[in-house]
Amino acid sequence: MYYHASSVGEIKILEPRVSNHNVPLIYFSEKRENVLVYLSNAVEKYCKETGFAHSGKWKKWGPYGFNKDGTLRIEEYYPNALEDTYKGVSGYIYSVENIKDSGFALQIPNAATSSEPVTVEHCEFVSDALEAILAAEKEGLITILRYEDLSEAKLEWNERTIKEEYKNAAHQPDYRHFIEGKFHIGE
Image (tube, one colour):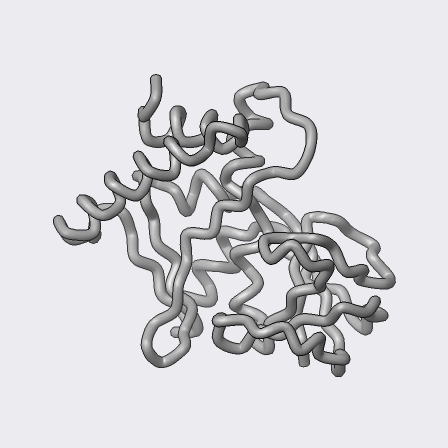
């Protein structure tokens, strides 16, 4: 089974879209829990909540990685990031039995892509993304590294990385607005 998350409901056919890799693809995971992080985008959510006007594609915020065993690990890079991003956010998880793999090499465990439209076989409504993420954590399907548990080295890395991200985001006003608001950089 392959899973794909979206904030958009009633999709019957998933269509390839240009994303991070500048190639039209549909991204899937073989693990349902791995797509939960895509039910909300912290940058888009924050900008909309603060009335920031933006047109065009939203910068994606992906505060996650994978443990050595391939388990998804969500990391909070600012206090209460998990709740800020996912609490009260609803969305949809689409699933399909088979896809024609695009052959595009991803460095993401259990991920696959299709460059061709895919007919949806099942749609699951998720009423609260935070509740779904916390349930997956409780079941041991994902891990969460909370902000208050970050090591000193990780906090230092975070500060350096965010400053660099801000500097490199001169042409991404939505991302700069998010960084200014959540990390108080550039203000």
